[in-house]
Length: 478
Length: 146
Image 1: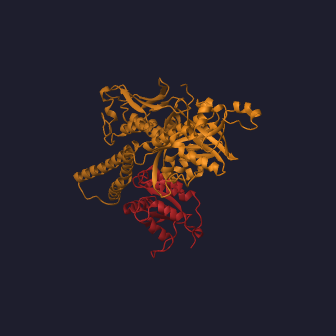
Image 2 (image 1 turned 30 degrees about the horizontal axis):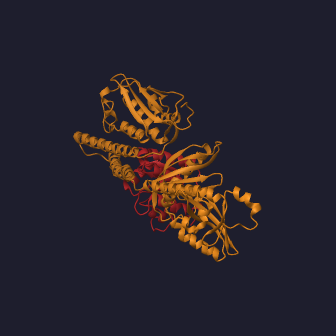
Image 3 (image 1 turned 90 degrees about the vertical axis):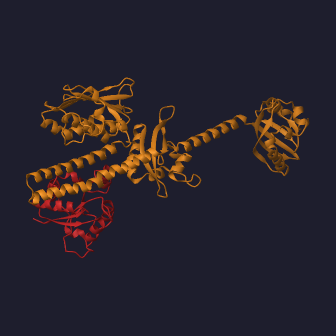
């Protein structure tokens, strides 16, 4: 080994440095700092007796020769990486800065093995995340509230029909991509998530620049730093456009729409013509003809109700968008509508004044309550219809159960399941009714992830129970 | 008392007869003009069709599902025309789909009335129109433009 000229006073520095320092020519080391033998396990003599290339990982040899040639041409080499073999056979990643002077190469290398491993692990993880996103058509986005920055994962770009190489999203771009009919609702939900720092979940449609519409299920939640301050929002989008279940739902929606409109329209026309004929014309027939006419008229009315109920039954099965709903408020809405009918029958509805917040969809829960109270009216028997509405928190702390107890005709316990089947009427119900109210209740409640069941005895009334998830932040003990 | 003007945009002729009857039965002094679709209604409003002369209607009953130009397309056309945008539009439809309702209100209709909710002989519709005409001040005809 050569002695470095004028190096004696600097020797303690070389010994202390974490970096590896060397003087070399293009083939072999001429001088090495003490750190080399500590890191690689070779003696200085072993390292400098032959060409340094023998310690370089075979895959890095060509690049190393090229870097040495660069130096030889008088150029600097900065942040060049290669692997050096240790005495124990393992390799360490080294990152080099080197410059040539007077025919020698002055080199400083740093052991970056840990950093390279971490980088590789991160790259590997990112690949796995991308793979998982691809498998489930699921992407994630992040709104950085501190830096006012938006991140889209590759799948989010794909859902939006955008190229990550040419497009960098802003918050406004994200909102602009929402289907116009979804924009207000979704913006409101996200803003509320920011204001109240709560999670959100909804379905929305995203319109690609080509006009193609993708249907997306979205969940998200606020992201807090260690002090509890909200610093961002993480959202997950699942592209459910090609999900066969979603296709089925779309067909059902289409059916519900056709049944609700196109099918009812001619029925209503017949109904109207009957009315015009009855009111503006002399009907020519005798009593028997009159009776038949009346039956036809009744059948048309029943057909109209049937189609209407069938449409709402179908709609009821379609996946809802849940949010935090006050059952107290829902009861108030429904009583506004049904209250007069209870009063007319000298009945009443007693509502507990501390009904809970639940995770549901307001209009669907309204329909559930409406149908249950309507059912109580219908099956009140000879007594005035009286219903008491109560609730309790369920063990486990995740759900609550609402109860609707009436004093009506009740039912045979063996019918407890059958009353929820569509088009089934038990007992002496009004033949004008289609018997689909409770079936709709079940569709709606189960669609919101809840359960509904009933207990009762003939002549002793019935109690209907509706179990729903509690709303996040409902203020009740968990 | 001024005569009221009503334009009904609906492809269902029987419904048009029913509305006419309802107006007559309610004793409302109103002229009813019908158009079978949005396209025809727009043409008539712009006076592009040589038909019997009629005063410009200020209240429009609009069905949604119609051939050629449906109710929403009609609304878009109407609101985009400076001479027509002031007309008062009630949606009068057999659709009970809440998406139709929401979409109609987003296009600033005065009300969304489902036919099944208008009374068997549309007498509730007639009540509404009577109350509307006796209570609400409408813009002068001159606003209609040429």
